[in-house]
Image (tube, rainbow, N blue to C red; front, side, top):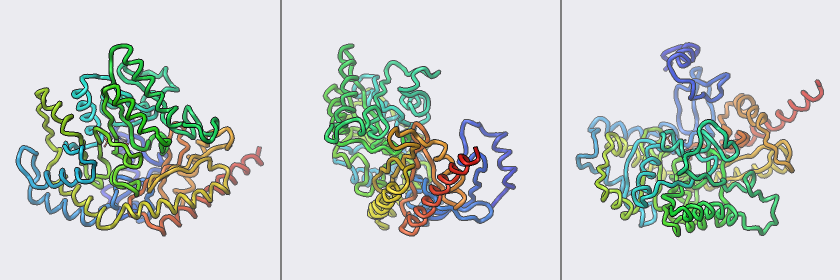
Length: 454
Ligand code: PMP
């Protein structure tokens, strides 16, 4: 399966590829040559438990997905200017999982393309350029999206960064009640943090109104992944949507990471708040590794886009092969009851991780829903000082040593991030918990050994 020895692969990568794209485990990167279900295999045949690849949603190289894609590839792959059954069947199937108002589907090839088109739709409908985005958000790599992705270029706390925020982009604090602007530890238990964070949006729309402007949209992931697996406080999304809509703007739910049932209780994470967005974007898991993504909106928003005389065409978006693959992914989600699995395994993990939290003070917070879980590591529970180095040690050495692939994220890179293929089962969960506990103990020991040596 290897075409080159690992050292040569690494050298050629350094030589011929840009170094802006970093590797996982950059000191000793993995060379993965095959994968199946929730496991990846390196060039020596070592097996790794994959806890992070939300793209391989229904399991790496799922046979049904591979077979449907292969069959269609041998028949036809062309663009959407011809009638094709796969295209309309997939559009109907996606729409059937969404509230009835969301009925018009645009097919694209990546999450970035989906969000870029969502911005165009919102700006066309509202005839406004103003976008409200969350601090620490990431919505894609296109120029239009880097502008609204503080995660990559700037954040409220680093206002002096080289890339300044364009005047039509308004960053509001991420509603993170553990580490954000309003933290639960600083307020009485019954304080309405959802309202406090939503008021930040109200301030933006009020300020815009004073200038005679209105928002084009508020865009947010339904659960913020890059910000450190954030679940928004009660009432936040409802109020945020209301303030934006009252001001004439649209609400975009970015479901690129968290859609297609990851939360277990629902197909789409926005449903957990009881809100209905005007535009939903989806990607990553949709093709189980094949590039296929989509934007879904209302007939009114789509009509406004069309009425501008816009002719929308996307060479690869919606080709019959991509549609066959996305349909197969949806078959597997249903046939293998993957939402139910996400709910069961997610609840099990959350309860066991909370047990670990009661034993190990390095765990400051455990949060999650379904198979979307974050473990916020701290040096001190009172100050909540992020344990960034320990998070790195746990992931890059201690868990990797046990062949468990985990990652970390958040503004301080101290949140262990768990978003595995949805076929992750109880045995995998038991192994993960056992090795994580060992890693927590080892990381504590390594600190005391260092302290003794000083
Ligand atoms: N939105 C979110 C929330 C994402 O996490 C990503 C990718 N990490 C994107 C959009 C962009 O997707 P893509 O990389 O497929 O362009």
